[in-house]
Image 1 (cartoon, rainbow, N blue to C red):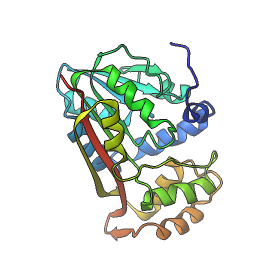
Image 2: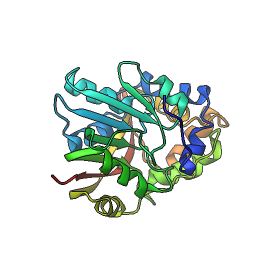
Image 3: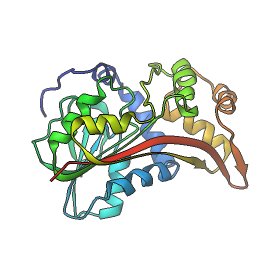
Length: 261
């Protein structure tokens, strides 16, 4: 394992993520893996990974996006999972190549990856431009990068920086993206054929109670009771309750770029 270097405030935050904190996040994702399926599919469509390629999931968490890549391609690709939290890295299944490093200094050889993706993993990164420079360096010519994250001013952004900030163990002060920012970051790093689009979809769970539990657990809102989370959600989201399903609106801004040949 390479020596971890603290290059960004995000690294300092990730350094204090506890085993308990990681366990809660992974418990939520493993209990309801289909809740964020649309969110994951949107980035996989942009990524367009192919069999035989080297694919990297950056800020991989517990490996949710990597699992989607594996489901899509089977064992006919090499999947690398980068994490700047040692406990998150340890929680990623061992059949992936696990790499513990800063997002500002990716522990990847130059021109070693065919695809790189980051799903909801950049909003604590202060120097986002440095991440995209590193991604450009690590990708092979014609390699693609796909990113999805929270848009500044959106309902998810407000929920995260107000309610999750209030109730979670470490608070939440996300540095969210402005419209067009991803395109600019990609262009400045050298990427071409850039596309950017905000997507709206829903997080779907079997019941309203499951939705409340999922949000409380996923975002580690330890200071809150379930009733506090239940009261907070309607301030930001119009939740649709149907027979056997609860739908909560969510959205991310997505972008893709290609490293020139």
